[in-house]
Amino acid sequence: MRIAVVGATGLVGQRLIRYLLREPAFAGAEILPFASERSAGGELTVEGQPFTVLSTAELSAHAPYEVAFTAVGDQLSRTLVPELREMSRVVIDKSRTFRLDPEVPLVVAGVNDHALREHRGLVANPNCSTIELCHLLGPLRELSPTRVLVATYQSVSGAGQQALVRFHRELDQIAHARDLDEKVLSPEMLAANLIPQIGHLEEEGYASEEEKLSEESKKILSLPHLRVEATAVRVPVFVGHAMAVTVEFARPADPAEVERLLRASPHIRYFPQAGDALPSPLTAATHDQVEVGRLRPSRVFAGGVSLFACADNLGIGAALNGVRIARALVREGQAVGGESDG
Ligand SMILES: NC(=O)c1ccc[n+]([C@@H]2O[C@H](COP(=O)([O-])OP(=O)(O)OC[C@H]3O[C@@H](n4cnc5c(N)ncnc54)[C@H](OP(=O)(O)O)[C@@H]3O)[C@@H](O)[C@H]2O)c1
Image (cartoon, rainbow, N blue to C red; front, side, top):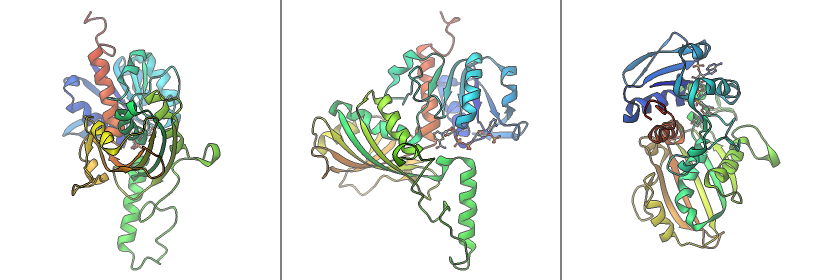
């Protein structure tokens, strides 16, 4: 089985390779890492295994692929994905480009896997915060969520490798400044700061990251009337996205019922209100579940609840979701071995 990882040198790409190497369904697969001309010929080591990086110009030379992952920017996906579809049984794309296309399944593994049955060689991976929110709302679907208020606290790694490099540099500048008046601080900084807009502004002053949460959640949960009002904020955290969520249900629920439903999900690590521990991006970034806690009745939506969640944006929020989608397709025989396995 040959698997292409395009954007392999990036934060999501490297995680993809790590999960692929750990996943028994892909044992023995040949993993081919692709990136830009800048990285081509360089070495990439993941889980102690060395890989030579290939240029995307060489994609056709190594085709066909059983699965191709694209973990590059929106613009590049727009041109590369159609080309890769010609060379692959299935492409799993991490960008925003195809997510709302009605012909393309948008899947959170464990929440709406059934949508994979309709794939036509392309599956879209949702936004990292959307995946986290849908892991929360998925188990609560039987209560019919109607309105959601969500404020996200998104780590710097969500903006990619270059942002992390800049974050490290800024932290270093602050650490070495004699005092903070030394023109070290500026409102654009990621370090020691909060930035209350992620992405460009779209309709009615909502930022693109907020629109993704709102529109993608409806499609994934098959709740076209769900209203999601989001405020997305970049915070000075390395990895792990957090969110404060308030949910209204068509069928009023009490926190005990919501807790029971959340605890039943294998994708959620539940933190009881009376316990000592709290969800945290630091701990959430060390495992593959969404941490959920601070559950309490909403004082705004009667019969609704408020809670707090954290998840690894690079793992369950991106790479792991992609690998789970690929694994589900392999198990269904939709990605690999269709002819030879009969
Ligand atoms: N970070 C997250 O938490 C997260 C979560 C969900 C989805 N996503 C999405 O996943 C995608 C990748 O994100 P990321 O955070 O991994 O970004 P990143 O760290 O900036 O990595 C970008 C990757 O794209 C490659 N690339 C850039 N320009 C290229 C070109 N012209 N030709 C070929 N490859 C090129 C880079 O290769 P070089 O090293 O050679 O430049 C690198 O491998 C984006 O669409 C992002 O929106 C990210």
